[in-house]
Image 1 (tube, rainbow, N blue to C red):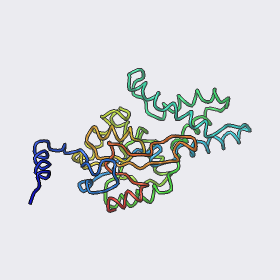
Image 2: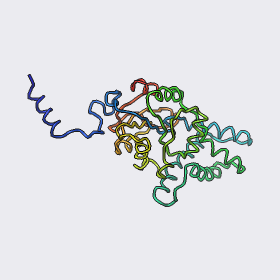
Image 3: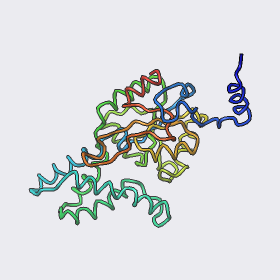
Image 4: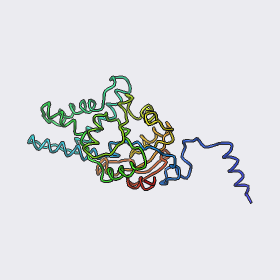
Length: 269
């Protein structure tokens, strides 16, 4: 026989129905697939989530410095380069710069760093170093996990990286994308809502059928605000031994996985 408590909860549910894209209370920030049954496509943050940008760039910088007969702290250089990422995109976002693809923004930051680190390079060497972002190494679980997910879902990057960068990286790292989505297609940088909306539009799916996967909670919050479902895959080593990456899910997260293989398992792939 229904209790008074059961009756009250049922009445509240009828009066205040849950938003169709909101995670059920038991799944918010939880690790469970029960709210994911409608998912048809997964879109991924790439830098830090799929690939280890810090180690990759640091190794390339140090190798180049050795060839030049000088010593450079590769991790510090990589951190400084990455530190220019958000400010440079914000110059585009605010209109200080017209649309400028990420390769060019990376080069603008690199030109300053070469002076700061007193690293003298030719134009050809500078261009080659700038393309180190095309050659980033995947995390150990990335290729295998993505391959599993691809069997059941459409998978694509949803990155601030330009299309040529994402294409070169995919070929270098063996990332099995079905297509490439992201900022350049709409000339907006995440977390602008236009980027997340574009994934839904280009994939021709209901917004709740698209799952955003990222190691960064800010990315997931922005995706959630547009209506996408969200999966958090923390990357504890992204920022190095002294870094402070996101490690604990918040209310923007529908599902948490320890890596891409765990994500595939939870989604039945």
